[in-house]
Length: 236
Image (cartoon, rainbow, N blue to C red; front, side, top):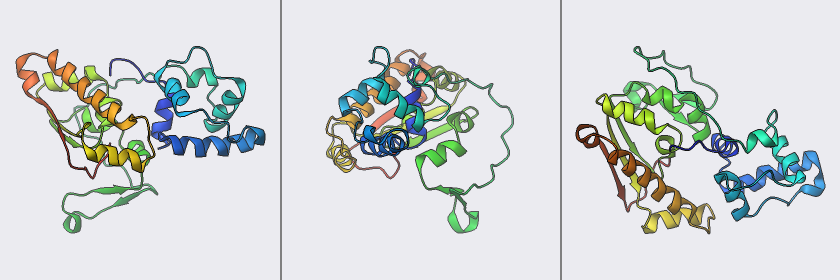
């Protein structure tokens, strides 16, 4: 959480292309426009992992760079492999007006749907409508349940989480157990063969544990993270 992610990783997550199969599909679409001979030349899983974790020295070979620039128009290969910086907004004192429902958001009437206010067709649609700063900056209590909870652990700076906890916000996070059968079943669904989800979930739990260890006693008591062996309906 203290290190900024590679821009390419952030953009893939925003577009819901972070699974290997989704990435390869979009890579081929762009390659067809750039140079049909580049189709099928996507990186291996291990190579893509190095791209997204900043282990790559320099830039990929020119064919990869051309395809990536076509996938993300307006971004050069050098920009895509740089770290993305997230500007931390000033905490608001007044709530923002409700956002209007877009094409991917279905507004729900409160009497019919209890406290459900909107339904989203994808994670990227949700993230676009409600970025982490919008949801968390003025929160007094955060309860999150999901697989890896990337929206808290990867998309929201840890110094902002610390600010919330020190100011009295209570945060409770429920992860899918990284050692359980359910997470392995999810990896099988998404065709991961390298324990990607298991590793990411364990890493995020460790990040919150380390954050809690740096807090004073009162703030630490307001942060609770645990894992469940049962599959969650939410996978943030």
